[in-house]
Length: 83
Image (cartoon, rainbow, N blue to C red; front, side):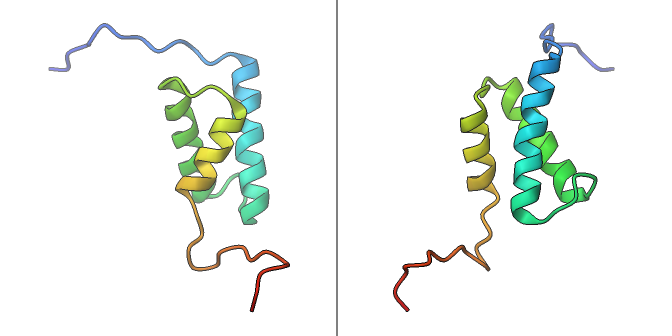
């Protein structure tokens, strides 16, 4: 038997979906991933989860997704970094 906690999540509004899609699209572009690929699907679920937990600002979500999904094998190198 499944018990319901009585907590309901509010439906995402069109503006919310557009903002989350923009964050995901930018992340996919930076990583050269397809929006339909498994990586994007995973990140999309994370974005929605964070949004539902109260992180609702585009800047914060973008920073969080970049931080959580750092590419440690191929970190970006600044053009003026010493060799």
